[in-house]
Structure formats: C-alpha cells, structure tokens
Image (cartoon, rainbow, N blue to C red):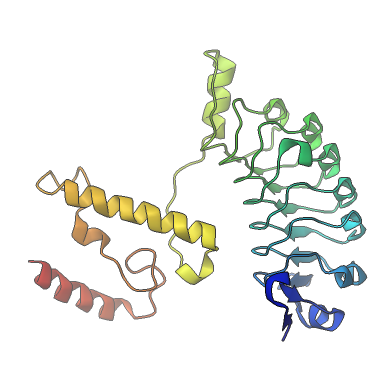
Length: 275
C-alpha cells in the first residue's frame, strides 16, 4: 500500500508504481494512480516511460515535469480533475497519443503550448472545465481529431481551427459565453458544435467529486420543479414520484444491484404508499 504523508499527499515509490501496471484487453500496459491524493508528479514514473497508458486523474497535481515528453510510448493520457495551470511544451513529443484528457483543471490559454498541435494522432481531446478563452492555431494540424471537449470555459467565439477539422464528429462547446454572428457559416458551426443530448446512468462511486456535486444539484433542481408543478399535465414536467431518491444511485434503477423483479416489487409498494 502507498504511504500517506498528510497534506503532502501520497508517496509513490517505483515498486508501488510497477505493481499498479496492468495489461489491458488490447495487450497494452496501463499504469493507474487515480485518486491517490498526489500533489507532486512522482519522479519514479519517468523510469516507466515504456507504458502505453497513464491515468493520474482525480489527484491534486499542480504541475507536470518538463520532461513529460519522455513517455514516447504513450497512447492514452488521463489527467482530468487535477489543479494543473499549464502543460509543458514537451507534451508535443508524445506523437503517439490518441486520447488526451485535461478536463477539470485550472488551465489558462497561456498555459496551453502550441506544441499541442504536434499530436497529429489524437482522436479525442478533452479541455472542458478549465479557464480557456483561446487556443493555439496550431491545433488546426490535428486532422484526425474526432472528439473535442471545450465545455465550461470562457470562449466568446469558436476557435478558428475547428472549421478545418473535417473528421470531427463530436464537439462540446456548452457553458461558454459564446456570441455568434448571423452568417450562415457561424450558424452551421454552432449547430455542429452542439452535441446530441443523452442520458447516462452511473453509480455515484464512479463519479469524481466535482461531477457528483453537479449531478446531485441537477437532481435537486428537478425535484424542486416537480413539487412546484403538481396539478399540471403529467406530460409537462416530472412528477415527484418519478424521481424518488434511492440510496447510492444517481437515478432510480441505475446500475441497481437487485434484479428487475425485486425492483418492480419495490416500485409497487412505494407507489401504494404514495397513493
């Protein structure tokens, strides 16, 4: 087990890091040090530069080492939910990366290097929930990019390079102070940027702290609307009984550990109580 060092976070040794390496179904070596309270990037990881996937998400990292570019074998890098304010220029050396997640950090536009445009094999780039208002024009070189997350930032207009990335299938630009012009080109771009709505049911234990708080806030908002809207047509709003809370679940019957039959029995009992 990793040793705890109070406010300084977790101490990760080379031995601990090696034990955390697993082989994925695709035969790749994945090193996972997620949610361990890390405040400093463990230097010992630089001796494991041959790993294919690295997950350091949900920690307290404020800085990445300047030689992060030494991980030349990386295909997948997850750094979401840390406290990063910038990314080293050497990240441009990771030309084999196909997935990069920098969501929910403290990145500013000045902290995103132009070398990010060298990652021409990227298929997915998540920069959501940061403090960005512009991005380097060099990102126009990411021709293979299919998914781009820019949500919850400070963009007042869509980055120009997005127009030339013809392989993009998903762009999330929600929760930005965008101001669109009236031209056809801008309207088309806005339509392209809006992702299709979807509902994903997950257990609370699979969510990071930030996402969990957001989901609970949205659920509370729905319950409030349901109480205010009693007496209206059932097609207009959610009735309160339809969004009843279940312990440990974000929504009724989401990844429920009981069988469908048992759940239906519970529903009938609770419905009678409501009546």
